[in-house]
Image (tube, rainbow over all chains, first blue to last red; front, top):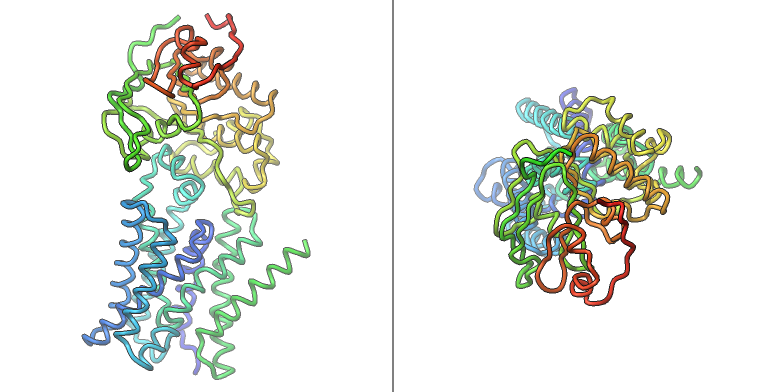
Length: 255
Length: 237
């Protein structure tokens, strides 16, 4: 399999969005939540397969509903986020696996690139730009809110709305990567490069820059490596990202 | 001395509940513009909860009315920051400057005002000492020209000379810029020195009035449930 220009552009756009969203997800200590949220796509994919519409649409709808659900449970109940994740997302995984079967399920979990239509690549690139624009224009609000919601509030930030928009951006980012990485691995592309960046960076711009560069580097080199090794690209991308993470641990120890 | 003509804040019949537990019940008070209100009381009396209701972070019954055009500066009680959060003091202050459209040059001005060195301001905020971090929070609160400052034990973790310097700075700013100050503090000596009114939360009914009337051994003993010793400064009036 060789990389077409469209596929390469889409990978770079998707990885940039994942790096930016991931930087804030990691700083907000949402690493586990992100993994769990990605599982919510599964029932949507199952429904799409059952009713014969595009699986990505089903996944996106389920992800957005999942984001709304976390947000409203967090804001309107006193249940801890961990409990919400434990209950809601395992349920999503269970429902999803009941609705999809065998190979379909494996594709949904691990991704299946196949042929990429122009429309799909165009939609993906546009969505990635939208996500990146959201994070970059809201980074100051996001950063103050992650240090303290009260400080953000008294600085004029509408915290609840910002949190909802961030969760939706997060959900959309997962949706972008489903095709390549699948439900199980897309959460990792958001989290691992950002976790590596957090080890290395000492300022906000450093964190965002390093996270994006590592996400792009892992995706592109993972794809090239996968095509040489005749493996599917998703797992190779995550192995490259994880190798960089462990290398950063050594680097930090050596400092 | 200028007489305050309007109230910066009016609170009427404020109730805050957590489930079945009433944390604040039927609380009413007002804060004239340019004055300093100290909020005192034992742990668990609801002082921080009151601040959170005032800034709209908690649901409540009753009414909280800020004067139109109020810009808040808030210094919360100690925040737990991860040591390896890749965010410098300058990043943090610039973020507020960007949100509130304050000039970037104000960031340096505030840093020198609170006495935080430029080198410390370029360190990740999780690596700052307790005192340095409180100064950073003070600089954050003072950015964007607030006209009301809310301080929740602003000098927790600050050494004593540092604490006095910080209070002097706050007091000077308050006088120079006519700021209204709401201050939660356990330091009754400081309260006596700087507050123009005191709200005491604790056992029994809340008590509100000038320091001379509220900071009496009898009122304190009733609110705290035990005798409280503090040093009265007659320089107050």
